[in-house]
Amino acid sequence: MDLTAFIRDVPDFPKPGIVFKDIAPLIADRAAFRVAIEQLACPYRAAPVDLVVGIEARGFIFGAALALELGAGFVPIRKPGKLPSATISAEYELEYGTDSMEIHTDAIAEGQKIALVDDLLATGGTMAAACQLVSALKGEIAGLSFVIELTFLHGREKLGDWPIHALIRY
Image (cartoon, rainbow, N blue to C red; front, side, top):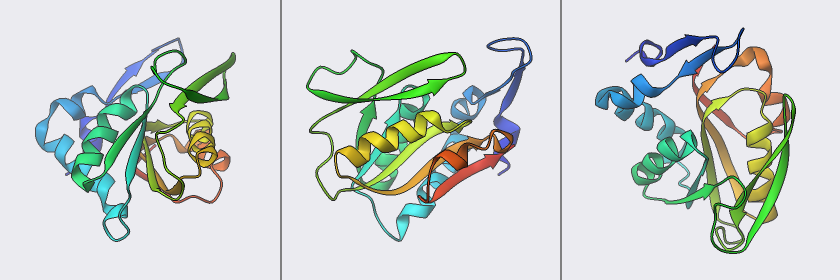
């Protein structure tokens, strides 16, 4: 199945000059969503993971479904102030300023094998911060998975030597 057929281009969103890659049609189509999850799972079938870590918010959609597919647990990384227990945080750069994200301090046990997932790899800052959090908790990163990668933004360059899997590359 050609998953690109289920990605909608939205010109000038969220600001003029940007072409937003909308995954809503993909997750609305049960067959396309199923194929996407099966393809995201492929790199982890031979070497299973303990946990899938999803990044707020669209990473939750794919991450939770991927965790079920792999028989793994799911851990959310959220924006500050959204998690109810003790957290650690990491800051990352945006086009105009910085932002941060958090994970519960007890979400990952030392040595657990982790797959991180998000819908889109753009500049790599968000995923790099997520990797920092997982590493701080001594999780072993098995791979980084994305539905879409915008190759022209060179996000891979911020993500070190971890295996990177993208279903669709623009």
